[in-house]
Length: 96
Image (tube, rainbow, N blue to C red; front, side, top):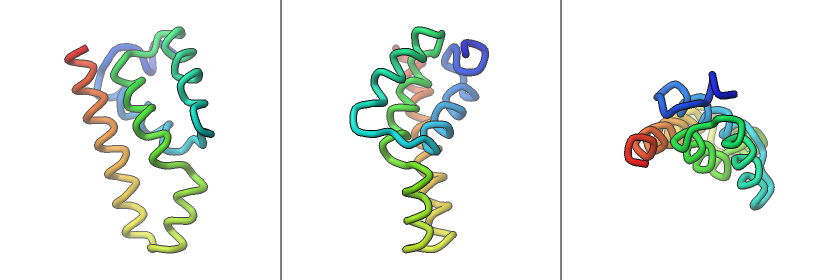
């Protein structure tokens, strides 16, 4: 875990936000999951990226968004969530 999500690199933040975007989190279950991941060596920036992307998106919500809005708007939304979560996690990792 520390090799993939350890530190506050851009790659670690991208992986955390992409993983969070495809996971389904029930309300408030992401906090103990992230706490366990941080205990395994996850950096603070990737933790924030996962916490931002997780509630914003999930695979079931992507299917619904695609059905209602189409592929292009779904792809734009997914790219924005992952991109902004990655960027903000990276900035937080630099500051914290």
